[in-house]
Image (cartoon, rainbow, N blue to C red; front, side, top):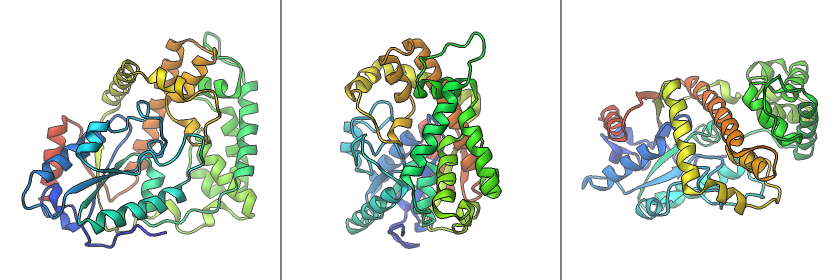
Length: 357
């Protein structure tokens, strides 16, 4: 797997100073303002006559690849996409399987297209694994979909059987609703059981992930069972941070501010028609990844009559806050990221340009 770009090619000097002629990457948790920041940097770059090449934005988001999932994934609007070229958005249908390998392949093609036009790539997103795959050129272990599906079903069955604490509203009795309920509680009994099994087979891998992170646990455990080898044995993995031909900038936002932004984002998304968007997806099953999209799972549960709209939104916000915490911890481990404090879009853009001057 390659990044499709070599060190020194098509740098992001246009985003500020000379930038070392390395593409700029904007990262941060959900609702931190990274998309608005990237768009502002691209606009500023296009207004500069000394620009090396016109900027084009490259999404590093595992949910924005799905068509018809626009409002809930906070995709750039049609006018924004018309103003600045965007890549790796709307690649597949929500029911289609899409993996980090698929993303890396599409990333390579996009970067090659950008290079042929003499343009400047500007990466932006919060999907840490996708970012590491393309920035570090990591090749993930093989996937074992059947095993993963069985593990997820096992975890779901345990979750359904788990009782809810007194006073907690339960959105129905399905596996999905149980997972939703446990996200609000901060519990994940099914994930905890699988995490313990992973600890027995690969204690190193288990120590590197939270016992509530079902997706990562299932991924690691399915590889252990499918290959007969520890998940942690596949290459140097995510624990090393070599020098790369990219400049990484992260948005540092405090938790209280981030929580307020998450709540406000849901209010705005509902005003824009988020519920109608979810209804438009119908009742057909989504892919394993798309089904985890924040807010979609909870609103589908509401439309299925498993909980009220208020309950669904409360749980969606709770799950989003927990997801944002995981993103913050993920990016905080990367010593290559240069951090700027959260602020207005203009203030953050100024700081990025100062970093690159």
